[in-house]
Length: 222
Image (cartoon, rainbow, N blue to C red; front, side, top):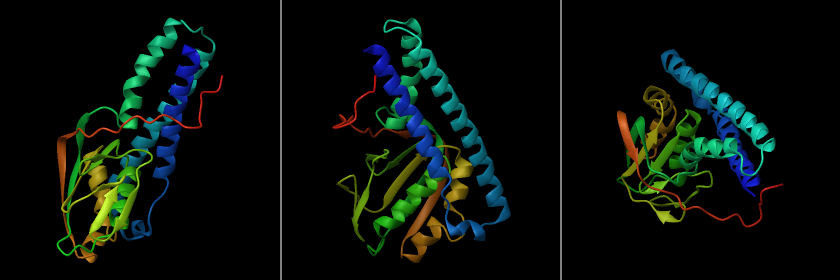
């Protein structure tokens, strides 16, 4: 039924927001070595992102209450669905997006960088509030996985080729500060025999899309 489907859609958005918030609470030991000015920029960005996520969670909870109280053909349900569809599509990676962010190019001339290095980059970006990320030709989703070995890295089963081009949409200074923390991912790339070039952009486009998958076990609860 329409209301059950819409409630399930909003639950997905609420779950994604909570998952993102949990990711943001995870930080590496490198923070202890960061410069005060880097920490200030990073903290400001984290606080702004936390406030936005809390508001998103509150809006989703309010929408769920309204939908449960309305009928299947409720105009409020349809309006709520339209309002949330765009945001959920961005989170799910099923629509192209554009906005400010950073572009990181990682070189690996000797083929020594491992999947863990790129995973570290992704975790830092997520922790700093990146709303959309693309590595190579692959859009990052909630179920993305990096695998393989040094010099032969795969993302969601697709091979990645150095130099690795990573684009992330979010607050550029916050994302840049997270990647440049002393002892963080940029230093890790250098220690692994690679190099990186980081640029802040006023506008980036992320065009790779993720296919919609049909849940095998989960169904909306009436």
